[in-house]
Every structure is written in C-alpha cells, then in structure tokens.
Length: 294
Image (cartoon, rainbow, N blue to C red; front, side, top):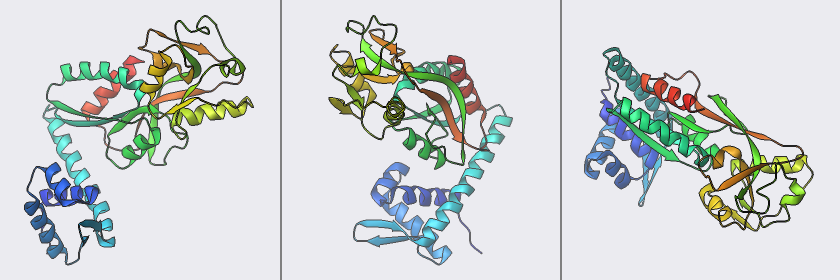
C-alpha cells in the first residue's frame, strides 16, 4: 500500500511546474535537500522515476507527466473541500489568483480597494499580461482563478466567459492633436499621421487588423510596441495616433477616443474562468464588485 502526504504531493507539483530544484525549493520556502528527499521518497513509493536529471537540467518523465495531471486534480479537490468547510463556518480567507490585461487595470484597482476593505483576511495574487491568450491559457491551466480581459478570438473549450461590456475600436489622440475636435474620423485620414500600434499577435492588434481588412485598407505604423502603457505615452506626446478600444483611455483625461467611420468592430470585456469549477464565496464577491464597476 502506498502512503503519500498532501505536502509531499504539493512539493511534487511545484517541481513539475518549475523543473528546477533550486527555484522550486525557494518558492516552497524549504531547503533544496528537503525537496530532493521528498521527491526521492515519492519515487521510491511509486516504484518509478518521475523526473529525469540530465546534467543541471530536470525533466518530467512520461510517468511524471501522467502523475502530475492526477495529482493536480486531487490536490485541487482537497483544497476545494477545505475551502467549502471554512465557508460553512463563516471563515472567508484564502487567496484569489487574478489575471488582468492592461486596459482593465484601473477597474481592477478600484475593486481591489473595496475587496481588501471588506475581506481583510483574504489574499490577492495579481498577474498582469498584455496577452489575452496568455491569460486564457493560465486560467485553463489553473494558474489563475479567473481573468479580467477581452474575449479571446478562439475560446478554449473548457473555459467560459461572463461579458462585462463592449468597447469599439477608436482612433486615440492627445487632446491637443489636430484630430481631437472631430466627431468621427476615416481610416484614410488616420493614415496621414505617424502611427504607433501594438505589436503583431497581441489581441487588440489582431482585432484591429481584422477591421482594416473589412475596410480594405492598410495602415503602416512608425512604431510597434508590445505594451499598451508605452503606446499611450507615445500618443501623449501629441505626435502619434493609435487605434485601441475606447475603454483603454478611461482614466486618461488628456486623451481623446474618436469614433471611426466605415466598418468598425468592438472588443468584448469579460471575466474568464473554467467551466463548472467550484466558485468560492470570495470569488463570487470579487465577481460582483467587478460587474458593479460596469
């Protein structure tokens, strides 16, 4: 009969994610020798290697990969059950792991302030990424409980989304830019100015390129940047024009979003989570705060 401790399984999961004994032991706040001993005991109990050690590199064996999937589910079930019992006793603690994309950071900040005031014993772990697909993958892999982002072009089958708002793509300029006084602007007019766009592959850029195809027009940027905040800094110089969702500039009083003429598209802001996953009391409360903001 095999006897495994929950702590031992958590050590295994951390190492399977990081594939580095030094980094995993540091993340677990234990010594490297303690982690090595725990893994060796686990492999002895199972009678099969879970990791290959080749030089200074660590790899999961095929058995390790299969075992990791089962352990991840088992540990998740135990943690969910523990959480449910605590909530039955009126103990609302634990950690929420939240992903967010740049343009929704300001909304998240407001929600965090309210949440921390209401539930001082809860912890929040916030992960920022400019990539919608990265956030979706992290939710699917149980690295995040949910993400506040835009709806991906292709939604993974195990994910679901709760729509919060729709935001049209607009030309974004500084308030003193020559276009700032217009009620709407054509893409032909936009291309007369130096353009600063997000890098190819980023969700907002993909959506924008689809809009350009619908209008049979090509826009060539002077600058491509993989960070929205830097794009907005370029626009704030008064020299550059960009195309982004209106929601991006919600807290930037010196920037103007001008509606575009022609065939336009909108971006859907949403909360992404795994279908059917247990939703804790704290997660429901945070959801409610986010929805109230919209």
